[in-house]
Image (cartoon, rainbow, N blue to C red; front, side, top):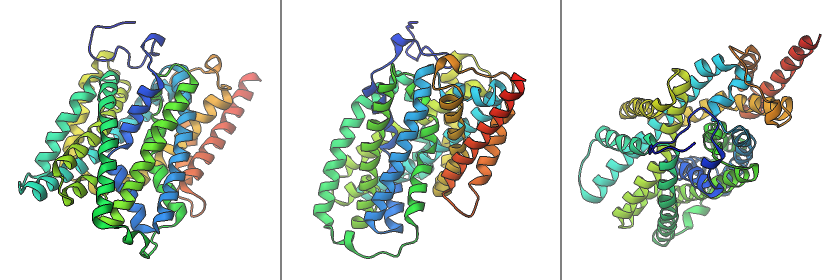
Length: 419
């Protein structure tokens, strides 16, 4: 299926094989999601709460876990050729997926857009003030960048592909230069200074996995453009691990030696404000366009829109996200991360059981369900409740409980159908 439209040609239907992309194209999109100020903030949070070695190791383990989950969930997308909101219809039913699950996805992506936009607006205003003495209200900066980032998101996967091919190599080079210059300027003595530990190693892993919870769950939004399972593995692991770890280490090191996780402001401190501005703009742009894009995909499901209305839905949701950012939602960043992990990791467990166990990992045995599939919702509710248990690891509790409950309920249902 070919199209002369600049926007992508498919939204909810399986992506034709001739329109699928190389693993490197999708890996760059995945990397672009992670190269952002909040990824640096994650490293800063961990470095302020525990010794830097533990901070980095807990983050690396968290990223490894989420990369493997992205592979397992992403292969469902590449096998079926459909986004997450359609994958969910197998576990929650088409009505359940479109009216509730997709609504949750949509709200989360609007929230991520708001968080990213708010952080970007604040950092941009601070950069202008410190480097050039120009005072731009944060709300104005937030609105400005919200509009700019929406432009790319409207045009879909093809625009994301082109943006990331240019932006990611540039960001890697510039941030490496900035890190070396910052270490030269501030030294490394602060890295070995003792710090009061306020977060356990396990909690550091949980925070990192929670940070990536939405990315793991929404992997099919992008892996549906992969031709093979091998492509999905490569794009997920190579797209997530190097970029995620680099941002983690950079944020942790900058926080400890410069008392500032934001590399754009570190550039300002070492006398290179223009490079700092370039990093801030490109990093937020490559990330937030994907948030608005995924929100638009889910809006098509939630509101029963025609597929060619995705662009309009993306604009409307992006405007809402920008408004939320302007009123300060970014201030609730850490609590937002934990909530996402607790809410979405049980769904990941349900997806894995539905496709890899019940459907034997085969498109032939995978069938979307009509209406509302209550087994999925019962498993989700119990999985979410288990994240509040006073023992274990919250996201593990949620995934395992939801997966076991779903498997048991489905086994009972299928036994009844046979009888």
